Length: 479
Image (cartoon, rainbow, N blue to C red; front, side, top):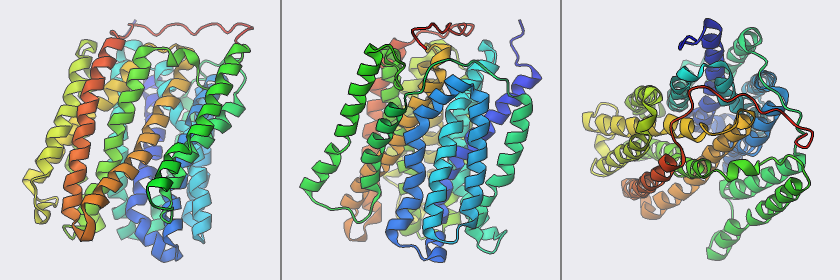
């Protein structure tokens, strides 16, 4: 058997990765164009926050259901449906006449992303030969960093070009022809894939969505109540829907049904340890980028396009390291998952000594530190995803990848809140650089926690099998 994917497999992989890129690109592109959007649509601060929050909420809430739909209907059908929803929602974003219309369209974008994203990893496990799957997952991890980096750069460039009357609309309208191309190509090159006869756990999906909304939405509102009592209430709010979800899933399992959160996954030590590592790791990624941009613009006086230039070297380093990690010997898992956070910590600590006036793309020391940080992150992202999914049954790769992506989005959302609180607490009275340095210490602590968790991930997973296991036959009890 050949160890190289056939041309249709390579084309299918390219289509899947382009869909993944769009979902990640639109997370970060709004960070750059949001001030312009707010001015043009005369949106208040609360509406501006919701433009960002509604995408992330819909995305995180429905990712696991998206994975389940892929398991039931086949990854091809759900991927193409997600691309179609994403493209139509992007058109609505680009044509939105008001802030309220833009908020609704952004939520619809999140729905499309939640449908298509889990199918990428599920598709990789079904279309790429086992011997080349590590490299394909490495490419998946590289696209995560590339989409985030180009989102920062693309938002600034597209706004400056003003391809339409309001430059910010280009950041959304550019998705429309790309979605059309992905949809047409996907119909030709994506195989049908495996399907199951399991029923969908709609009550579980609604309870999970409620838990995610209770966790993220209150912190996303700028006019929320302050003080220790209100903070405690906000922390405790997600517990009620989470407890209801756990009770329902246990009841469904005892009754012979198919729960949304499959108990078999949560009993796998390697999967749970990898899930925890994903939470800690991704709690540093987007929050670090957000605070770096704020510090560059408010502390160093850069414009949005200039601050976006800081991510060029970081993004290239992430890309190169992800590719290398995807091709690495499986026996080097512990080294990659521990060495990556160590490099990230070196970058964080080094940036603490950089003065505000030196924080610009032309600084060699800043570029070198960001390259080190990006390389460390690039070593972790594909490695943890690859080995967390290595022991998962083929019929559950959709829901497993959905859980991983949900963990990523929750870590991004909650991580921004926590890191922002550290940033504002230490940077009061306009001391932006002091706040950034305090946040860098917080990120360093998370990197240390990731190093500790990496040992559990390495113990929980041995080398992946040479060939993917055959799909488990669905029995009447499972149905």
